Length: 245
Figure 1: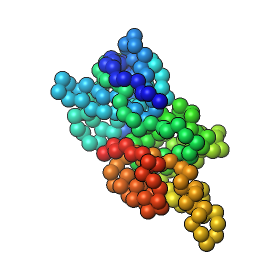
Figure 2 (figure 1 turned 90 degrees about the vertical axis):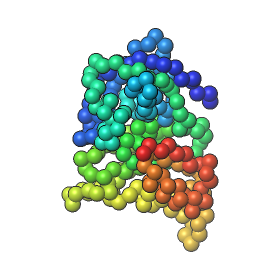
Figure 3 (figure 1 turned 45 degrees about the vertical axis):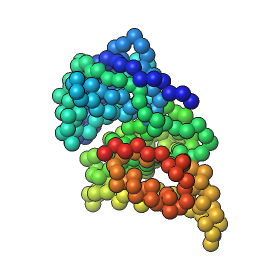
């Protein structure tokens, strides 16, 4: 499928929502007559100043007139400060769409693995609705205070029997009753990947090879997850990567 060519747009921030201490969600209206055409998984390049540009991934379903994105301001770099200072009603200039971290058109089960704001492209894909009936989402965060969109994903998991959602915290409080540790430890524990023939690895290999893995987030997670999948003989073309930080 051919992806649309990038164009320059002007947008207006219609809503700025603080999700956590450091993560903000922006709702942006397209002010150009040209429709904004993007595919879930793609990103926009924002013009911070004439010499500086920063990339942020769409986190909403495609819509020609509006979109959403999330920004983690904790790095306090140029892009972080720019969006932290933005207010509702402000205009932003950006180029879009870019990127090829998009879903393959095949019958394979889609396994989404994210850390932090690496959740953005997967929310866009899920809200678009095409893969939600044959998909698993693993999301790794540190603390309870870092969690957002949890109820949204739980609702989707309740509505679609083919969608599984796993939230994993690496540094939770003693009151946390969910999954703990790193998501790389949990993905291959999914019952779907347990050998179907006791005493052999045939079932495991078959299930893994009938899946496609999408990794988005920090470099440590991506490196470890790719190594674990490679050790299970998952082919490189079945592992897609989008490095956020």
